[in-house]
Image 1 (cartoon, rainbow, N blue to C red):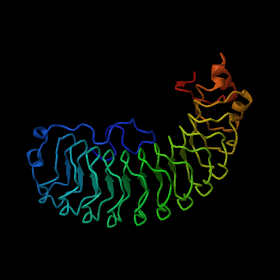
Image 2: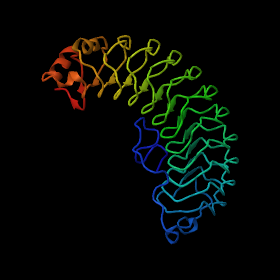
Image 3: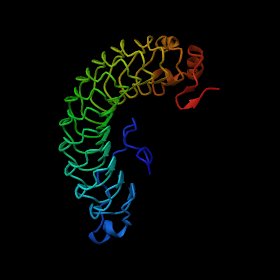
Image 4: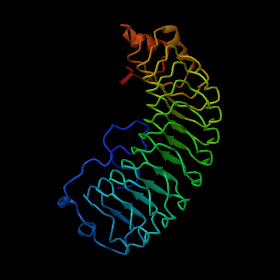
Length: 325
């Protein structure tokens, strides 16, 4: 399985369904040893041991040419015995029982590391991994964004579903194009000014009340802000390249301040408080708009809801989850 395949990767902008990290502990006698499930071939470049019930990383020393190691959905508690695998480019440890980032110093060629769905409390011990492009730490118990400043080649950072309260310590990551911080406890959009290459920003399911401090993110094409406490659509004047704007499940009562988003294609506004059709009609300014979600707003209770919306924006292709005729 490639790093981009599998069931609902951690880099999805949709907040993942809640489940306990490292779920599925089994009795000691059911834990499998790695030597029982792997055939050692010194020439191999990829090993896939997903769903193996493996309890410990071991006996991989001969695999000096290994570039991709996939250990998803196992019972591993500790990152260890990888020092000889200096050719590794991708390492997946998604959904195990790991409590600490450690023993990765020798993996200097690593470009992708996935330790999502584990039991990490802290980001640390990544100082030698300066070639990292993608780092996935979704669904852990991390409270602080820290110790990432040296990872200047990162293009994707996934920290969704943790216990983070503040966006901070990202100013050196100037090559980031995708940042996922959904399902945390963040109260303010801040400290993103240096991330000028950012194309996708996900802050779903946090504690935001205001859209702000996005002026420098002029390359944003996707902005996900659903499940917050936002009341007003504002401060998007410089984000003219936004194609997808997600404000579902907030407290917005009026559609406004988006007429300048000339390339907007998808506008998700379900579960808000929009009650005036004059507000909805402002969407006629967005000539590329193809998809609009407005269900569970007061306007959606109108018996002629779909017809009125299609008349206001004739080029719509989908209203809520249904294609337009």
